[in-house]
Amino acid sequence: GAVVSQHPSRVICKSGTSVKIECRSLDFQATTMFWYRQFPKKSLMLMATSNEGSKATYEQGVEKDKFLINHASLTLSTLTVTSAHPEDSSFYICSARDVGQGYEAFFGQGTRLTVV
Amino acid sequence: ELKVEQNPLFLSMQEGKNYTIYCNYSTTSDRLYWYRQDPGKSLESLFVLLSNGAVKQEGRLMASLDTKARLSTLHITAAVHDLSATYFCAGYTSGTYKYIFGTGTRLKVLA
Image (cartoon, rainbow over all chains, first blue to last red; front, side):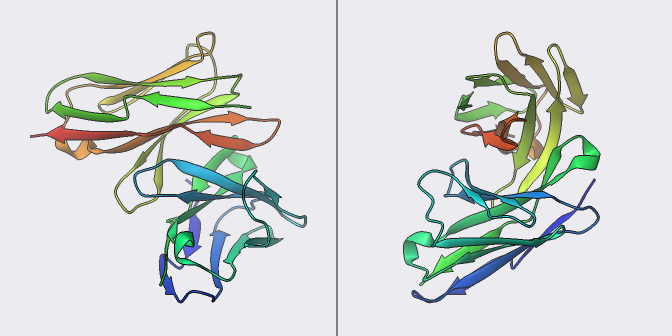
């Protein structure tokens, strides 16, 4: 199956700083990528849909100025958590859609963000 | 807007037993997915169900889809400890290209 690489897998940052998470599709072109947030023992909450070459579409209640998404190429989307606070600590997962495989989405390994 | 619910939320079962996880969704979903998540890990794709009556099986897991009832099931046959994980179903709407996840079922298989 298609491979989606997410980096870093773990990051600890200080309150007030920004952190960038990368999501790469390694062997296919992804016109659309998705960013999810998962709280402990909870389901995945869709944050935004990232489309190559255009602005991301954010879900209701997600602060677009807080969670900056850039999808500059067909293989890379980035999520930047700006001015991080401890409540931003969470597990962030990206997925990329491979139109060549029947619209199945493949998931990155996830990033555990801890803001101290 | 598509909403997806699963039950049960928690399931503790003995090895060798059978059980079913249910996934209900609120409006038309173009396809239905099942995923497995181990603690601290991302999601592993298990099944994609594309049409009414679809049934797929892999080892001790079998998934089915009834689009009229807006119901998908994940049946576990003769459970083993290695199946302990959280299982998610997800619906998909082609109009929005969104994958909407269910609440998840935490399965614990006791030896």
